[in-house]
Image (cartoon, rainbow, N blue to C red):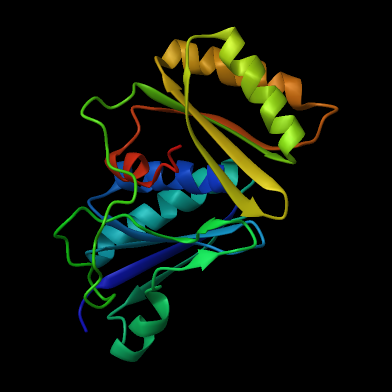
Length: 219
């Protein structure tokens, strides 16, 4: 089987999304699939030419590490057919966190290299107008993230577009809007978390890449 596969596993959704954006902007690769576990782990699977995958994984690893994602990364060249059956995840719903845990990121019609036939369906269709920026607030505990996002929305003109649970009490809320508004909102929300829960990450992605937009856990 031909094709090179890159795997990047992080602790927390925000570091994973930051890594996806960094990988997509670093090299010509395809983000194929994202899979969650119930211990706050997120694995991102990418494909493409070996050199591009290596460069992208390195960029993603640096980006995730900067946000305490504790990344683990590897590149699999010439993925074996038998191994591909394990790497590619079938659709799965986790009743513990009441949501799907496997997300297809490839654009419709793409054939993921090295991961079998791979029906490529975007779970979260992109809008015609991409946002200037996305903001992420990730906490351990609902109270902290709800208080933070209320503060964020009161601080600047942003729209709440997504929410994701990872298990282990991790909750991420995502806002979109102009870069200056999203930056102000996330800063205000981050400051509100202290004393209410544990802040996992607070970050702004300017000019988010197409794979990030496809993978947004939209409301």
